[in-house]
Structures are given as structure tokens and as C-alpha cells.
Length: 144
Length: 411
Image (cartoon, each protein chain N blue to C red):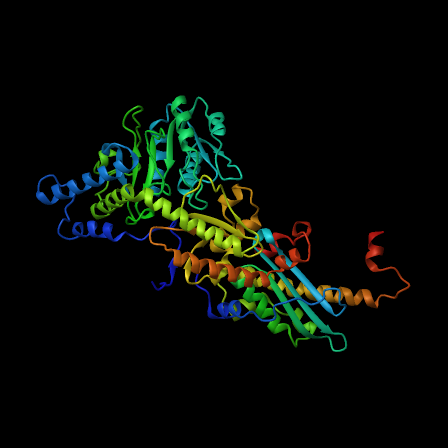
């Protein structure tokens, strides 16, 4: 398969590779995919609690060159976005930017899933911290 | 000697035509261009003479008689002809065929078509080493079994099947035995009589002959094997395969067979040394690199190895100066990882991480050393990018993680 120049560029020089402390309350972590399917993406964001702006983003990906490029591109876009802007990123934008062929569209879907999962994790942490200390956590209520 | 890039290390997919083969072929495109079926003039006679010489060269390589060689367009046709031809000709005798899960698609899909047409097919499993257990073959044979088809050497993992044992038990039970010998012929010794083979598929371009030509060995005595043709026409090849003979390619196949017969022993020893240099070099530099399939029963030029926690296609992309292939889903349109590796039970994630190195006649020590260097540093780079590698370094067992549903990854 021939790769587009932008996929090759991200594969050769991936942006924002690494990890953020996942227990930090300002960090949201998304881990999506499965080893058996040949793709796993871990995408993390650090959000400024005062401004709700994503100040940092990191990724690690097990997958093909297009999966690596999709997640690398996602971290590049996320930095400086508000969480509402991040929520609006669509996989089709990644497909267009990287010129992914049809057989690689699932890589962009996975990157969108990873963004959504990281945002959800951040929001859940924030909601848990806001819950009054004298009340049980919502999950505990749900379990009863 | 300076290293020439790119390096071709995918000799199970195809091989370059040996210059000696090309030289033998050339006159048959231009001056000796006759139709081997033309009986009335010198052009036809010369072409026929060349075809008969090639028939003998191919027969000699596998211990057969020249009359037992049927030329075809390649091994896919040979597999189709053997399986469908036997199924049709022996339809009154029985309706049951035995094969194995790691066979080439030309065999499996021929069997599937027959199944749709009402035949019964038993597909045997393989062990972790990739080999069929001859006892399983013996147990699967029943009164209505007409054919057992088990390959000699596997195209992905290079594992050699126990065809001598399978041939002996098929002969004892009076069942015909076909072997897709494409990857083994010219690489490791193969003898139709010593191995009790009744039909064998051969491909030219897998052992330094041209593409578009192959052969089917069809035993003529003890037992005399009959097959119904799948291509009808002028009755060429004793009625088993009509169609004007591809004389230049057949001459090339014959020459390739002659060279293989003369040089196989030396070449196998050299390739085994190269393969071991590659395997040891990679395993010394890369932790958690696992060979897939038996090391003991294996083609000398094959190394199929999984680099855990790194995806195969991303490896291929990084090894851009080296032509190899992967069992990863991403290299195929289907998004399914290699069915051969899955059949060994190595796990889908390890199938996704596999690389097939196929060493051949023209590979050198320098090329192997270059590949070791590049592959090892690339695996390091990709592991630094791998969330799975990170988890394993942190002591997390990735099997305990509740991974998200495959559906989200495979839209």
C-alpha cells in the first residue's frame, strides 16, 4: 500500500509521544482499541481547570502507520482547543487531512474514539471532585 | 561489495528469474517461436523438443517420469486441477476430501467450492508447531475418502508437513495423496516415489523460473491416477490441460529445475546459515521476538517472527528499504490477521506483530546484517510509541484489560 505524504511525515516524526500522569485530576486518559484487532491508542489531555482549555496532549499507539499518524495529528489539534471544540472533532476531518484511503478509515474512527474517551475521563474526574464530600459518590449510589 | 538498496527478502512471494534461466528462454520468444502442437514443420518440432526436454528436467527434480508432468499456468491452476479433477473423476468412488487449515487458498477455496457442490471436506487442525498430525489424517480417512491434500512447505511459516508419513498411510489405505509442493520444490529434497505422492503442484516463479508457468505431477502407475480436465479444448497435455503450450516459460521452468537439482544441497546449507544469522541477530538485539512455527521442520530460507507489542504494518512501513511481508491484518484488505498464524494458536495480537523474512539465492550476509540493524532499531522506536509495551514495562498484564469492543475499531 502506498502511503500519503502526511501519513509518512507523522509516522517518521510523531508529535507529542509520551504519557501524562493518569491520576492527576487535570488529566483525561482515553485507551481504545484492542491488541487482537491490531490497534490500541492511548491519548491523554491536560486541561487548565480555570479556562477549560487543553494545554497539553500526549499519545502512544500500537497500530499501523495510519493509526500512528491519526493519533499524532489528533494531539497536535487538541493542544490549545477548548474541551467543547475537542468534543466536536470528527474522524472525517482526520481522513481529509491525512488523505486516508477507505481501508484506513477505521484508524481515524479510533482516533475520534480516543479523543472522546479522554474527554469523558476528564469530565468524570471533575464531576467526582465537585460532588460534595458528605454525599456518597454517584457510582456507589448506582451500585445499590 | 557495496550494499544495494532496496533489499528483496520476500522470496516466498516470488523469486527473480535466474539469469541462466532467462538465457535459456530467450530464443523461444523469437527464432524458436513455434507452436509445440504443430506437427507438420520444423518450427513446431523444435518447440516440442524444447518442451519435452523441460518435461524431463522437471521430472528429474522430483523423481518422476517425464510422462507424469502436466504443464499449467502456475500452482493455483495445478491445485485446482488436482483437487477438482480428482473429485470429478472419482465421483462414483467417493465424495470425501481431507485437507488442513494452513493450506494455501488455492487448495482451501477449491475444497470450499466442491463443498458447495455437495462434496464433504474435513479440514484438519495443526499443532502449535504448525504441523498436521499423521494420526489425525489416518483417523479422518473413511470409506468414501478419495483424496488427501496436504502441502509440503507452508508459504507463511515455512513449516514442512510430514508428507512422507501421510503419503505412506494414504497409500496403505488406497486414498490418493496430493501435495501443494510449491514452496518446497527446489529448496528441500522431494521425491514422489519415496514420499508416496500421487499428485504434486509445482510453480516456476518460486524457484527462479518465470511467472505464469507451473506443473502438476500426475502419477501414471501404482496407482494410475486419472483426473477430469477443468479446461477443455485441443487436448494438449494428454487431454488433462488444453491450451497452446507457453513454450518459453516451460523452457524456463525446466532450466530452473535443472539448476535447482544441481545446486539445491549447497544452496540449502547456505540459506540455513543466512537464516540463522538473521534469527540470532534479531533475537540478540530484540527482547520478546518469537519465531512462529517449528524450527526443526522448516524451510532453510524462512523466518517468521513476531515482535511483541509492535504492529506488523508499522514495521513494514519503517523497513522501507527492505521487501518483506507481514501476517498483520493491515496488509490485507480483509482486516483479518493471518489465518495460518491463528491456526497455530499464537493469538491475534502476535499474528498482527509478525514479519515473514524469505531468504533466497541472491541474498547476502551484508544484506542480513543491514536488516538486523534496521529492524532492531525500528522495533525500539516503535516500542517507545507502543502503549502495550509501556504497560508491560509497568508490570500490567495486558490480558487482564477489558479492551473496548472490536466493533469500534473495525468500522
